[in-house]
Structures are given as C-alpha cells and as structure tokens.
Amino acid sequence: MIGWLIYREEDAIHNAAYIKWFQEEAYKQGLSLKLIYREDLHIGVCDHKRSVYHEVHDLPVFAVVRTREPLLTALLESLGIRCFNTSTVARICNDKALTYHHVVEAGIAIPDTVFTDISMLITSPPPFPYPFIIKSRDGHGGQEVWLIQNSTQLEELKNATLKESVIVQRPAQFGKDVRVFIVGNQIVSAVLRHNAKDFKSNYSLGGSAALYELSIEEQQAVHGILDLFQFDLAGIDFMFSNDGTLLFNEIEDVVGSRTLSEVSSINLLEMYCTHIKETLKNK
Image 1 (cartoon, rainbow, N blue to C red):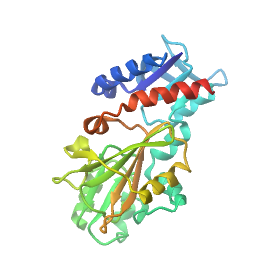
Image 2 (cartoon, helix red, strand yellow; image 1 turned 45 degrees about the vertical axis):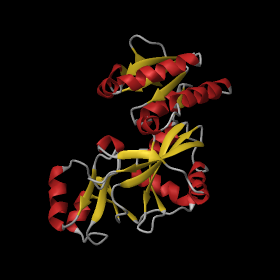
Image 3 (cartoon, rainbow, N blue to C red; image 1 turned 30 degrees about the vertical axis):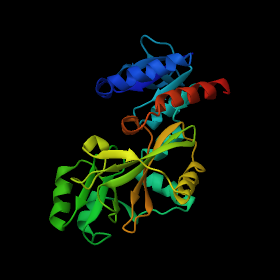
C-alpha cells in the first residue's frame, strides 16, 4: 500500500534521520512510504476538477502531510486520499486563535487570550498590563513567540516582524510546559520540558525533558480536548499557571518525537504506523 510522506525540501533535509526511521517503521507494517517534496507538487483546479499532480508518482492511497498546509490536505482528501492528520485538524490546529476558539468548548483552563493584530496593538492600549506574551497565529516550535515588557519592545516588534495576525496572552510560568503525545486519539505519554535560560521551554531551543505522569484531573483535561477532535498523531501542549495547575497552550499538528525518544523507550512511529495500517484497513 503506497503512501506519500510530504515535506518541504528544506525540512526534509533537516529531518532526514526521522524520515528514514518513519519509512522503516512503515515498511514493517507493509506500507510503502515515499518521500515527496512539496515543491514538486502542483495543486489547484485543472479541467474543471480539483487537481494534485506530481510529474513522476501516481496519486497514493494515503498521505502523511508534514507541511502545515490545510488546503493541500483538503485537496488530497477530495481525491479520496486518506490524510494523516485530517484537513480539519490541520486547519484548526495550525491557527492558534482558531484552536482556542474550539478548545474552550472542552471546559478546561485556558490563559486569558486576545485575538488581534500588531497594528491594533500599536494604536490602542494593550489588552493586558506589561509584561505579556505575543504569538503569531501560525507559529510553531517556539518560533514567533515574544515576551513584551514595555511599549518600546512592542514598537520594536512591529518593525521587526512581518506577521500581522497575532494572539496576546497573560504570561504563565516561564520556561516550563508539558507535551502530551497522542496517537489514534489516545494518550501515549507526556513529557515535562524545562528551560532555565529562556521563557520558552521547547527542547529544540535548548531545554531539558523528563517523563511526566499526568494526574487523573490532567488526564480528564486532555480527554476533554480529544472529545473535540480526531487526531492521528499530535502533541497537546500545556503551560503551568502560577499555582502549578495546567493551562492549555496549543496543539502541534506536525509533532515530532525527539523528546519522547530521549526520555523513554516508547517507539512513537511504530505506534503511528500501526494506527495508519489499521485505519486504512477499516477505510
């Protein structure tokens, strides 16, 4: 059964070892996973029909889309190709404002958050007292997150970033969060990430990691989110409030497994490929 593993070329080079591991685990499940560069795909409408075209490869049975591109996923789905994750997950979870709009229905703790843009922040009074956090709506991996401590930094940000749509949040505990790994809409494990040198806790930015045991209450919060979505593979991130309880942060649609591999023997890609195989069997 042939599937596409879709990456932008630059990201594929950076993640070469992960891609090789992914393909090996897929092969064990009887799946042929071909690496496809996004730059080699032409998508749109041709002859009055939706179209996804590759010069060499025929369309696959399934696709693992690692480009954070909801439209591409939606086009593939419209052609009968099962995508991991779905276009619904990609559309919602790669937009922080839209994610908060949906996750609030789970009834879990969420930091006070304002959806706005940089221009409005400059011309209107800030929604919260300094300091506060600004995040681009489509950032990921700890990128495009700024701690703003005064009006000068806010003005500098306007001049430094091309991002216009942002969210603004009251700060939680700095440099500490929990990522919950999900496969097939089930909790696999959780990792505590900590960075004593930065207000961002991302492992890729120099933080440390350790396994984290979710309490019953924390598991219930995660299940509240799972009731709203159907994840194939995802990471649900939580911050810590000042009193030590979890606050929802974001959902990573294109989640990696580096931190989990560093702190445990859990083979997340083996579990994921098993899920893909079982899903296709029941399609």
